[in-house]
Image 1 (cartoon, rainbow, N blue to C red):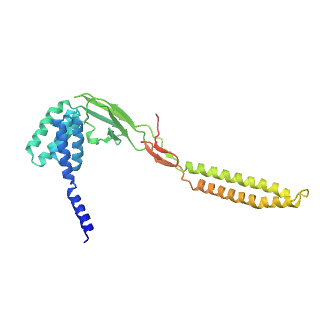
Image 2: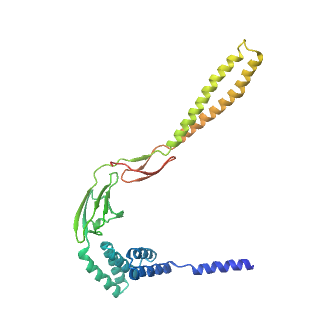
Image 3: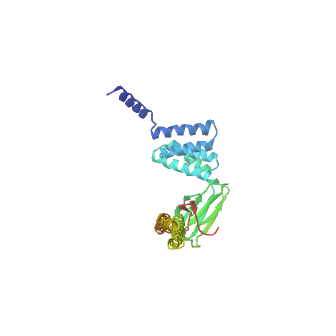
Length: 296
């Protein structure tokens, strides 16, 4: 093995050895979160670190406990108690009695403060989401939410226009939210070939115009060719104009008109991209955005 290859191999192996495993990354994020939560008193940043850590190590009971703690400091008590419940269940399965006791202690303290809503939805099979997160029908009777925060509750059923209600609730409050999905949605269509057909019509128009011009020009030059009052040189010039300029214009016009017709007839037709119950992506030849239907 050459010296150059040996050096490259050593560098690669060293880099692989230095690369952190997901567990090491999770441990690092956890340590950063603890410092932010305790030493720097920054629960918002701490929650971000703990959320990143739990994605890498979803079974970490300590991270679950600390997520409960940081969200409790942010007064996100419904989110906090949800993490304490997860921590208590995980600790019970792993026989971590101290962690389980700590989680249950915080749960008991938070329970009287947690607000909740009772969801009534029609039709019963409509999908309900709170702040974009789907709610299980088993939670319709009591769904805990964070207090003093505006929550967006939506209900959606196939072929029906979604219904949205915004709710802000106080600590310890219980409220019933009724959602009725009754208005039929208007399907959303996108004409992806609109720009192409427009271009085809323009080209076809230019081509047809060139052909018409060629016809008129040819008649004029033919009359000159057969005009006995003109000299032979002038008649020959008319013939040359018709042969060179007239023929060229005819070929260009025919090609342009044909290209325009091909673009027009091969362009994509209008197609349905949504049943109208939600926003739909809109990507065409000349625009990018969102399409929506219904009343605004």
